[in-house]
Amino acid sequence: MFFAGDKKEEMTKALLETHAPAMLKNFSEKCLGESKFLCGDTVTIHDMVCAGGILNSLANPNGRLGAEGHAVWEAAPENVKKYVEDFKVEMKEYLDKRPTEGITF
Image (tube, rainbow, N blue to C red; front, top):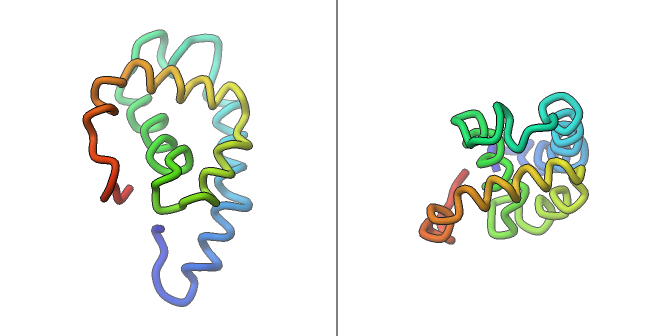
């Protein structure tokens, strides 16, 4: 994904096995609260970065991380999944029109 050269496979494995699960756990515990989104009940730029990043990488079975990344997403904390689902509802019009191939995030 983001790595090149001889270390790509090793670094991708570390990302999927260690770093991404830890990030999702920390995001769940430290960033999500009682509100629907990070700064209240309305999508802000912060949600575009966070939920959009998760949606484009781990939660996207067609993304560069493929089935392995999607498996990490399936094991994500429930409140993170709800947060991303709420984001998808708010951004439905855009998400329905965006390309399904060639997304390189």
